[in-house]
Amino acid sequence: MIESTKKPLPRWLGWAAGTLAALAAAVCLGYYWRVFYYLDARGVPGTKLCALLCALALLAVAAAAAVKCLKTFAGRGAACVFLCGLVFVFASAPLQAPDEVQHYLRAYSISQGHFDFDAAREYPADVAKLVESFPGAWINSHTSKGLTTDRDTGEDTVYDTTGYALKQYGENGRVQSLADGFAAYQNGTPAKQSVKEPILFMILPFAPQALGILAARLLGFGALGCLYGGRVANLLVYALICRAALRRCAGHGPLFLAAALCPLSLYMAASMSYDAQLLACYYLMAALFAGQTFSKSEMLLYLAAFGWANMAKPWINLLWLILPLLHAKKNWRAPLKKWQFAAAALLLALGVNWLIEWYGGVFRYHYGTIGRMLDGVDQMPQLKFVLSNPLRFAAVLLGTLYENDFFIGQLGIFGNLDLPVGVINTTAGAMLLLGAVLGESRGPQTGLLRRAGAAVWCVVYLAGCMAAMYITYTPVGMIRVIGLQARYFLPVFLLAFWALAEALGLKVRHAAQNQNIALAAFAAYGALSGLLVFQHTFIGPVYTIG
Image 1 (cartoon, rainbow, N blue to C red):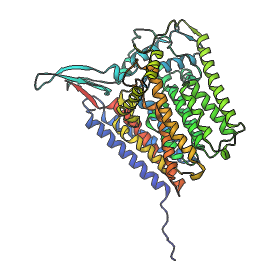
Image 2: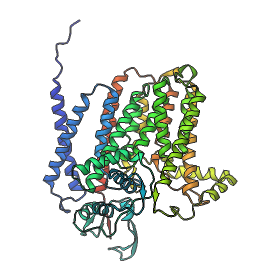
Image 3: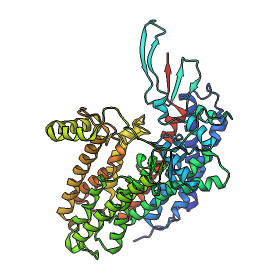
Image 4: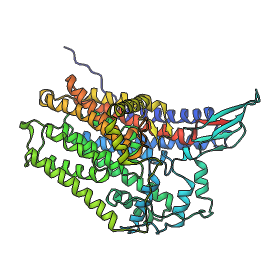
């Protein structure tokens, strides 16, 4: 047999080709933006835009080289999560994530050393200016619905700019965008109104964000820089917890990486919201459930994540208590028996809830009576209505799921349900399915009880989230559930795809190769999604009125 005398190509040649491809893509993207979104007419210099995109392309290549140096899949995955999340940190407009204004204000207060809650306490002038310049849900706040005169027919026509971050009145009018918010923040005029502490009585969920804000303040940054500092710190904690999940997911690393790099996950992780840590704790608990055994260290990790989740979102997260109990007896290696573990977890959750409520009540000043968020919402009458009309309530749940594409088609809606990115809506579910396919099933070790239990748990959790929002947030007797967002169901999608992969019994011969495919595919998808969010938020499309 004649051996091949061909030598492999040098590694630097591949990196050189990749760098050239990245630079070419950056130039093409800049040209596409200029032509399709009329950037020349809007006064955006083409050469500066091209230079900026090329610099970002070089940074992306350098980041890929740094990730390549890491040895473990979990380490590489966490690095990809952090780097892709950085794209979202700066691609997402300030204070536009769900409840980000309130979360930013609470974290800023903690960074100043205030560990109580005082409604009369005011923030610095630049914080007030930032909040004024970027009102929450900017797209909804600046959405116009009304009539305009058609130039051809002269008749009044209805216009609706919902979902558009950029608006233009007339073909030759100035494009109004979030850039106006940055200009308003920097124009030097003081805010019209002062800003006081929000109605939010928690401390620990905002510790990472507060540390990031504190570091930014010590470095001399203003309110906007503090916002980005808090986002980066929050993202870092999310990435570290995801690393712990990737280490313990028993062959399903690609699926868990797909969930961690899901655009909606990254969007929340790159915000000031404590939902970043909450999602990471969900993924960690799901990974510990998916593992082959449940030992002492895994039990302690699970209890820590379980306690934190119940501190952030009480009651509904008690359902996470069920999953570890589905482990087969032979795989239960924890020092506590199952009933002892269940009792300890329940006491932990109830104790954490009591402590948070007590602390928030004792150290609360000048708040007075706190009203309901929506008119017509009343928990007890709604609960009585549900119990007396169970079939109608079931129809409401099913109808809400149908209206919202079962939420698997809403993984590309960002902000307070105001900015849909169609490409992400269409592809995000498929990426989770790809993660399930690339994973490695453990076969009989999983057990029918654990697979079926996970499927039932998903249905119960889904219904529980909807019921909680119906009772606490929806006007009595309404025919749909108000306030639901796809991010609530990310752990459901993760465990559903895990159960599907296990039920199909997928066997993968080249697990390491599939992990590399997953890293490349999901990191590229996460970074591209961040770029699309930036494009929709700052570049276009522009809605022309009249």
